[in-house]
Image 1 (cartoon, rainbow, N blue to C red):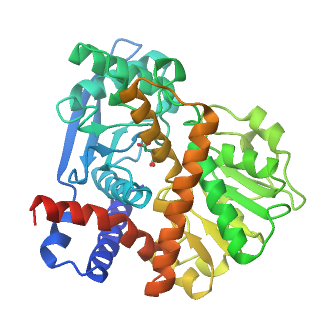
Image 2 (image 1 turned 90 degrees about the horizontal axis):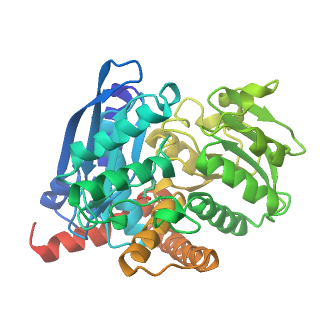
Length: 416
Ligand code: GLU
């Protein structure tokens, strides 16, 4: 995201936070506190590259608010990371944790880099350097990182190892999304997609469309998008379109998802291997039942919202729809399941991972999936209920559900 775009995204988030708190009856002082993160750290990370030269990377960690408990959220490695983006993302993490009723506030980190052009060892040195740089403000009871865009379980393993060395004791609860052998949770890798599937099922039920045969278009073939395609395909839905940074593939009778998953690389690239039948922009405007933006921010905007044909949009990515587009889609009667609800599966299972680490007792995949389903459905019912009874759109309803517990905790602590 460009700096200007990140500023707009942060501003839009603050506008909805303000509306949500006003609707809940809070005064200006609470709004002033919760509109901004309480702590943002910028770090410079020197990394020895394979050719012997040293490159200095810039990274961030933003903590929105820790009144409920430690802050929680991923770390992204991406060339367009910026301070404002990380700030907005940390606020969204507070909302996700609030909706799912987890004992956390929101946090988010990022490093400006392009992991696609870095070697395995360069990535290791960068991951360890990031942890050394932010170690003062993170920890199992302070702020718990996790994977996000272009970071994975290997990176979490290096980060956990570095943190454990600094603290001189094994600290699996410092970070989630780890490999299973290092205290990762069963079901974490698939959690975001599983959560999105549950939201799609609920939305289809409300609209009276059977899951079997429902036409789904998915933008993005990363962790969330690829597993989602797999699960929807297995459930008998017809995945008519998928895309990645290079372009999109389309088949009105359904794509061969197993084959595409098999050919996908670890960054989610696959369409470059085929004759692309569509652009990313066209994919969003496909004639389908459910559109799932599962890539990056600002994809559905005031410019293309009127051309969207799907009657259900489930946001698997963070921030894919602008506020203007949200308004236009709500006016058109599109059922929109907002990001802070739809993509909460990842952080919910991260919470399970942290609980298992703290207990030293590990659950079966079935147990994880069952508990995830319960929490997603409870979150959905809560948000949908606010939407109906308070007459607000689904995004504002989700913000109201997500911010209430945090505001209450702030009030009880006497901060405002
Ligand atoms: N990065 C994921 C998100 O945006 C997961 C965060 C976590 O597991 O803490 O929700």
